[in-house]
Amino acid sequence: MSEGLVTIECRYPVREALDRLETALRARGVTIFARIDHAAGAASVGMDLRPTELLIFGNPKAGTPLMQANQAIGLDLPLKILAWEDEAAKVWLSYNDPHWLARRYGLDRAAEPAVEALAVVLSNFAKTAVE
Image (cartoon, rainbow, N blue to C red):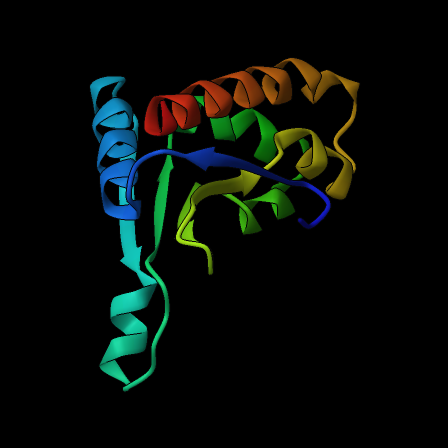
């Protein structure tokens, strides 16, 4: 996998994994901005793509401190988690590692508590979707 990408195996189909994730996020008051079905998009132009869906979500309380440190991180906010099926029919969840994002955007030590909190929250939400 790519540097800065967290990928975990999931025992649920793509749609169910993101349904589980979306339910958990909504229950915690996290805003869901969009859900994109890339396979449906591919099908709409006559192309095949294994199940692949993206959930875009966020909370200004978590993201704003990062943007205060460097507004350019807004390119990677709100947060995104991709559920996708590989060629062996295994399902995976992938998301950007907040620590990697902090390095990418040169966030200083003052942003570390927000970065760490975000990393824990993302990991916990991802586990909700895969376990």
